[in-house]
Length: 523
Image 1 (tube, rainbow, N blue to C red):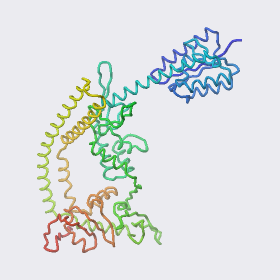
Image 2: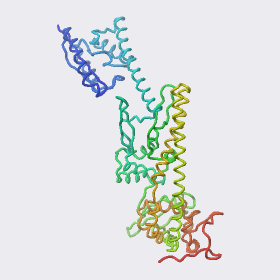
Image 3: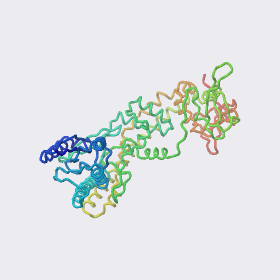
Image 4: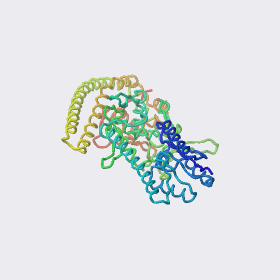
């Protein structure tokens, strides 16, 4: 009676698939033809690791053996590493297959039929598994040490894809292909906007919607959080520890950051703080979350249905309704009347324009001096970095010392490069924008009316520095942009807004006698 067998083939990645499978088929077929073994069925796992048995065709193989073991004598593999590279698990599976089903495993390349009940055969089988396991550990160590050296020591970017905002550019060192990240300016502008919007307290879901409209790609639910946490944008990358070598954030070499490292750290600090409940922004209730009750709790808001069936919106304090329960229509009109009194006169606009031109000229001179200073600092850091590398090559310092100082110098270099790049890119666009929009300040009510809810909130945060609150039917604030407070007494008299200036915060010089400044409201 002819003996029968099933074969099992496996490769772990696409790069080895063609050669590996053809070779395994040739070896197993040759062994079965040599000993006149009939092949019953063959199972093949494509692209699965040998470190565990969570493989689809291996599961099918095991189920097949359970149903047809009476007609199977051998389980044939090209070599035992195709079956498994984990010594303990592999030996237990082979023992179970032989003891329960009477099927022996065959290493065709060695021409060995292993019998777990025979001591010498069991030892040789375990030895072959052990050699495969050792080879796997050595390969993993080689890969991990190479990755650690490339990332931590040489500062190379190791990643299959470039983060949004960058593209991968390659070059060759001999036959070795290397990569660096290069900024894609159109995408980088979106990344900078995301960081700026987050620091300005814009809700994450709105940041995501607006960034998508600007051209951000990606479908992950936590896309914005991942971008904000990505150190590559600040010129760094995460490195896993390797044996006794430390892990953490290491600088990327020859890399231009999109985000200033200082800004990136500010974002990380903010993200690590206790997460506050998300405030939904509604066009009907734009003050919700940005105006507080006098008790310090941000006002919430909702619609209430009247007797006529029509809905009316109200702002209220969640702590107790006795504090505040205000009609949204009244609250909006009261704030807009206050904005009427904050509107600048044409004379004030002209004065601010002249002042801005003087400040721009002064800033241009300061920027030139600062670029010269930062360039000199960068040259010194580059010199120190080259000196450090020479000492390490000459074996004058140890790896830990080199690693620590290399990280410090590289971070300084990336930070200085970012500063110089930003200073060189600065232009007169801000001043030009001011000249085109400063006339809007003559009608603050119109600005508020034409803004979307998110823009209204940003306007309130900016004008009052996140300190506007409501008490006894009056808006109150300890801070107001000084240039907008020229009618503070009139706003107080009309119970619109009370500016509770702290001692020493007398930024506006009185031009109206003892009663202060009274600028007529522009109509």
